[in-house]
Length: 402
Image (tube, rainbow, N blue to C red; front, side, top):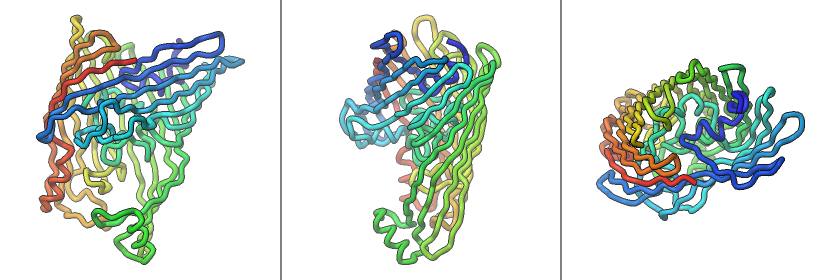
């Protein structure tokens, strides 16, 4: 497989850590594969021990050879919750509270050509993920400081940096350089109020009556791009940017605009799934891009993720990762919310892991997190709610890939 085709398929293979697929049908034109994994774990955190789902999923890939060097392909992926519903909240919030057996993760269709590149349409990994995916290999506590899982650790669908909804993406490569550009074509409108425990309908009613505490928010198109440079067989450099825009109209008629912006770069050495040393790190600067742990939009922040791993010949893999998202104090945009300017937001933690890799499809793992976050607030109830999903923890599990 040449480098152009690798670039064209990066969203289906490379940017999904430890992705595996088994071909279940193939003829001269069509091929079908099945992939995913079942991951179940026992986790102890926040004073509770519970069996929880480990982001289990199932996916189907479809490929069709066309004339003149073109191919068509599609992917459908659903998250699967094999252990039942759970109410524990840890640092993978989107997966841990999911109580539906099936839920949509990915779904897109595309065309690819060795020379002309590829174009895909649907719900897919964003171009920004190309920049930072290489630190996202922990099974339990994946990185929540790289600007991917936005809006309190969700899947990055809203602003297209994670599994972006309604995106159109183009990819190609030239020599050792590959790139991706995308646009997210959507129209969304919602209401937000500086009042706890208020429904969307009640908030809209307040906005309609002219309350300054209520805002109508339009968040529509986003744009992004990334560049990857394969400097050597071991060394990869990445850089990228993603941009969106909030249009806010307050109930009293005042209007404002906030730019959702993230940009940064990454570096990777080696292969996480091969024997030997692996290292990766990335840094980003973001504005109006994410929320704190109780849903308030963060003005500006700097995020850093790093991961260092070693895979021994005896199938034991060890790793340590360090992550920080630092917004400092006075980080909540005024006057959208009532917030103490002395409030501090610094998400910071270390994860250590020990994996026994029977084979690439079967891994038994032990991972532990030590939290060093700072969510200082004069409102102690608010501080407690901020700290709820950021805690020390330890987890043991099994990942069985299809």
